[in-house]
Length: 228
Image (cartoon, rainbow, N blue to C red; front, side, top):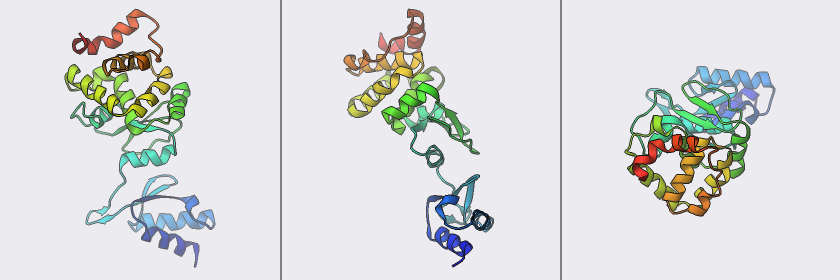
């Protein structure tokens, strides 16, 4: 069987999965030619250079991949999760949906059309990777960092919702604490406050405090009405 036939056979048998050139044996030119032909025939979607998607065929064409799965495929095993309004919506703190889904990824994740990717590099990204954060963990940290811009619920309701999530997921709470050292100061301050409210003062004390009282007050201002 030729390379072209082998590529076509494997792709047409698949459903809801990504393909890369390295998934096939044969010459690079032959594989790329076969993949390009399948894209032209509507049997594959080219997500970006080197990454293809085989979805379910519908009357409107090939069903595209979920943005979350695209980012996950590009990030390999690095932690990813919603950011900005996408994170607030994911956690039930807002009904707003951004025009483009926004995802935070630790490390060098390439750009892709119709998805906004924010990169968490350096020590912040390293800490998230070391703690093996889940998608929900990342979303919570991202919401705490951008609270005043994305949270739609009243502060008291939002705090109780997040506090209950912490109580329901002790392992996740520990992951957040282990990764928090290199988060921005406002996020650390808010996580410390949230942990205390949720009944975990010892865990809150493991997170570095803000460098000044002014920084702490500014970070807590959007939450104060609910905490007093």
